[in-house]
Image 1: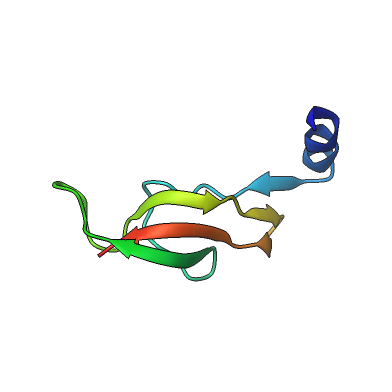
Image 2: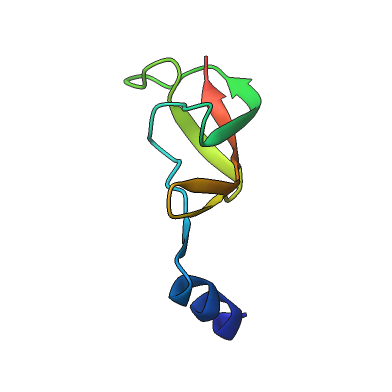
Length: 69
């Protein structure tokens, strides 16, 4: 697994940061909504179900996330 991850990084594949960021439909795919905890704005990504990846500016796979209502 580590060798595969290293090979992907060498060609420029990077994970998409999701948790704690505002929901962005160009990078994230909302799978669920949950009530926002105190101090969290609506539309913030609460958790990541499946990581997403990009190659340069292109999204290879959207991050599947849970979004605050």
